[in-house]
Image (cartoon, rainbow, N blue to C red; front, side, top):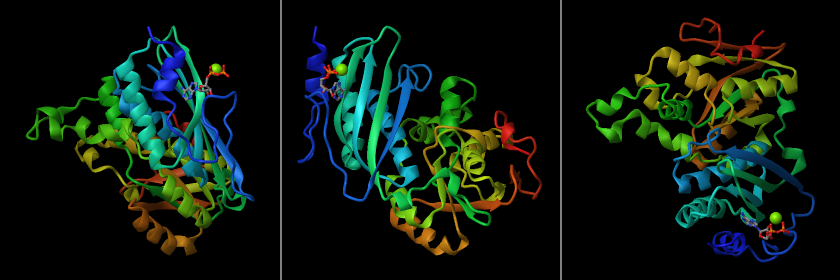
Length: 329
Ligand code: ADP
Ligand code: MG
């Protein structure tokens, strides 16, 4: 039986950039550029709560880091390094190898060195906690409290796919399309699964937009809930035009209620919701093109409190999808 130290040295000790001290001592060491501040965030993922027990280990490694990089992206920070806390019921070598490959593939893509962590045996399933460190110009940090009346509200990417994949896997939504013309390739799950299990954190986009944005958040808990955090912190309200929402094309075959729930309330999205002055529209369009990520203007920040969403007919959607009523007037 391999030891804890074998596991760490075989799978989580890849070289770190020159000038950093990685795993192997009591602490890791790294610097940030003079004049910049350290941005840090942590997420905890539990088997059964945040991921299904049979999820592919490579995508789980990817997602464990992706959800943290998404927080750096939402602040406008540049990733530098991360720590990985891992609690495992057993040492399954091929599982750990695939997990590490998925984790490092995304870490390398974003220049985010794994510089340490902690590893322990678990009696209650897998637990994963990642801490990320990034650097940021403090005058450009996209704080939640910075939205201003009159701001445009923007969202990156497309909405709704992760919630659909989650509901199919959890058994609360039927994937009728798998029996259809397209076979498994065309199934609703096949079209939406990557959004849930392999999200792409919008790091480059967040860094480029930071100088042009007032407030931002990643919509990991759903558009309405997370936009609600911006509204509360900024003391403003918002109006969203439902016709403008960038709905993932796979959702076309769903009922209006399922589509609405997925787009407005569905979590695990890892897209950015941002507010910016009207005179930033050209910059947003240009940066979206450069980043290869669609940026869509979905509404406006207004005076007062509360969040209203208009449907196709221009009527206020009421009630808004369940669980998020407390953000309405
Ligand atoms: P300590 O007893 O000081 O907490 P550990 O024995 O837990 O140290 O870990 C030994 C070294 O391995 C440390 O430098 C730690 O950062 C690193 N390490 C432990 N677990 C992981 C992991 N999952 N990923 C990366 N590095 C790890
Ligand atoms: Mg330790």
